[in-house]
Image (cartoon, rainbow, N blue to C red):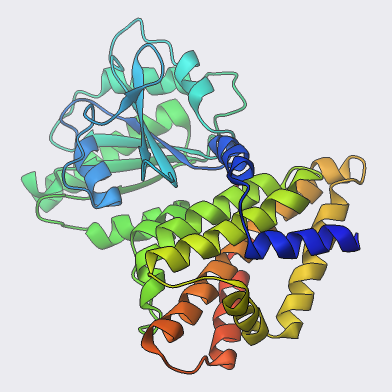
Length: 365
């Protein structure tokens, strides 16, 4: 055990095994959320993707890679994806079979975004395809993961808007049941955009953390720049940490590589001296807690039955939270170094603890 911990420390300082990170990345397909875009052409799917990604040049169809006979997928960001968008062509065709598309979805990490124009009363074909998905026997469809987004609300009076929302929601309920969330928005006027924001935060916390919000701590400017990278590495650690044995070796490598990458993007040197100062500033209490939780979550994965279910879930969520907290604290530490000011250990420990606590119960898979 001592040799394993010694190796983990070495991997932190000299992360050279990119193949382990590649293996963890391969497992991310079961963790990274897949947002399945459901809706007719012109419903506002491209506008929704642009809003979520903050990329004005994104168009549904352009930049999407074919993945099934009738569908294409758009991972974002392309190099270290934290979310994927699945768009289905021919959705309104009578012969459409959702089986292959469903199999391409990530396990337990998918959301259907049903986009419906309020000024288009003809939604029969889309609802027919949604019904086929609902009837699917695949375990990859979670019936509580449907979000209905009513678009082009500014085209209607308030009375007509409310009437059409009620009508369309009742039609969806006939097909899907009542277990779905809905809101309305206009991407041109940004009417009701705050409600859409809140719905996405509630249903997609990891995506929202990485894409929507600037950090509320002004001193931690690095986190605002690098939060997408931190989320990606955290997801990779969560994916690796759910696997018995492998997590003990892969997670430290992923975390070490994250620290190197963060420093490189901030044009800072990352070496043994910096690493020891950073971990020393975090304090022995956090280091001990971090090490103990790592050993516990690795041990639970070897307990029959429990280790295959609850232990793996605990391991993935804690692996994600620990990596996220480490990344956020590292950003603050690197801010201190960039500014040439003394490291505030108390503030560093506060950032780590709050970041860990905020993510330790997040479901990553």
